[in-house]
Amino acid sequence: MKTYGLISLVLLINLSLLLINDYFPGTLASLGIPPWALFAVMAAMIVLSALRLQPQRDKKFLWVFPLVSVVFPLALLFVLTALGGESASGLSLTSPLLWIGVLVTLAMFRRTHKKVSQEEAVKTQANT
Image 1: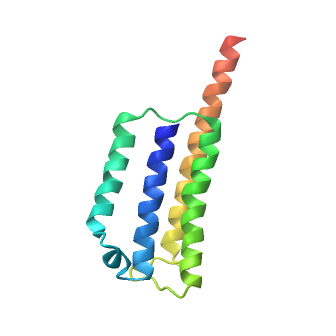
Image 2: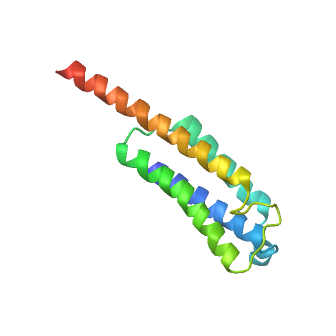
């Protein structure tokens, strides 16, 4: 669980920095961070989680991770817009592609949660 938490934190920080740079161009350059480095770290984290870690089956994780991975970026987009930023890539709260992505992500997490619940029910029945 700690490894998943660390990977999730790194991915959210990278995503946050990329969104801030999208809404306020030049932010990463002023911090001395090349955008390619963030993409490289994100790719490494995704590959690490896909290749090295077992699928997370903790019920708490199946609810917390989707909420954090969807709500946090949406809240950040809201804050960046409220601060007067404008997306250079067209990614905004009014973007239909953003909401389609949110719905697909939530549907995938729901499917995973349902599958885990069914597996637990079968395991419980087998033990009785």
